[in-house]
Length: 162
Length: 76
Image 1 (cartoon, rainbow over the protein chains, first blue to last red):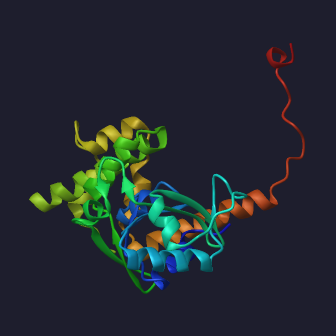
Image 2: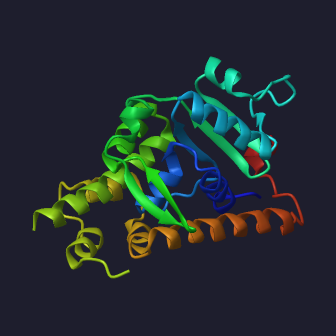
């Protein structure tokens, strides 16, 4: 099983303009709920789309929901789409142009935390926004995460008040 | 990583009406969360990685020796 370490190394190695969201963001903030895929909100500037296309080609990315569909992985294709779910040599990677409940990259990146992990610096969605995104997604597993993340958030707020 | 005593107390003894108390009611084991909060972010990722590797190992190595026996209700 390709897991989180390889995925983060992939992200760091290619210096993509993006923010980590989803379960890995939760784990970095302290959540104990396991996750296997890496969810990222990416900037849609033409430079970043070109970098992202090159990065995804290097790990043999295919569409997870249609792996046999002919799919030309280049900046133009990424520009025409928005949210992509890939299966790759480093595991499952989801690249979202928009996060429900939050918005596009600039909104997601606003107030993001910065974490140094495995020798790379990563932007990670702010805990408050992660709670909002998961609440908006509303699946059972998201609501479970919301309960835990709200406790983490409140613990930090309460200690900050002391 | 040394955690603030206030945070330790918050998770070990969730105040009534707090988000931590609601999480416990929802079924979250906050001792696992607290254990994670005591780690650095990198340690959290390495722990997650080790957990996933263990699951993968178990899937690859566990073998069902015999199917579970059906109850009378299931077999009727």
